[in-house]
Length: 174
Ligand SMILES: [Cu+2]
Image 1 (cartoon, rainbow, N blue to C red):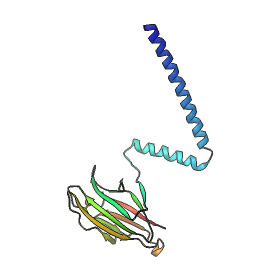
Image 2: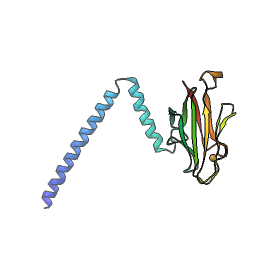
Image 3: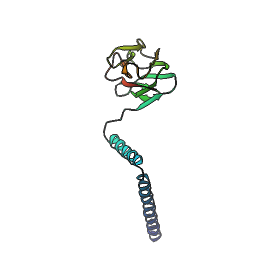
Image 4: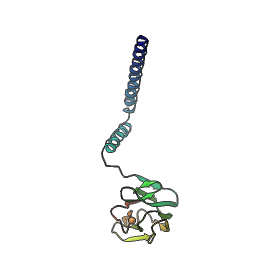
């Protein structure tokens, strides 16, 4: 019994070794074929950088393009208050020029929030008004202008009551 078990484990060990060799070779081949263009190299570098970030506490800010007029926004409380927009936490937004957006803002948290879109000088352009805690909901309507108007295509959003926690940048793109 012992002998056959040893034989089995030796065979298994050999198979594992063989599999590892095959996988390593496949990875090397993949890296070599990725390295043939410079854009592939930078994407590999980006993946490596992201993995480094995951090992620390830093999470890169997601950027999403709002290609639909209707946008769902939720106030959330996970390690502090954050806006959740189309499923992402405090994302930077790309909004299309000359487009009317309707933000539906819901607040299931235990604190009042207020979604504000402001220009780069901090001037409020649109506000949802106070959204009551425990399930309150408000609509914020906002129509973007041309990207070139006054060179002011960088905007931002935040909460009036938690401006350092619930915020993100907005870029108007054509
Ligand atoms: Cu808030």
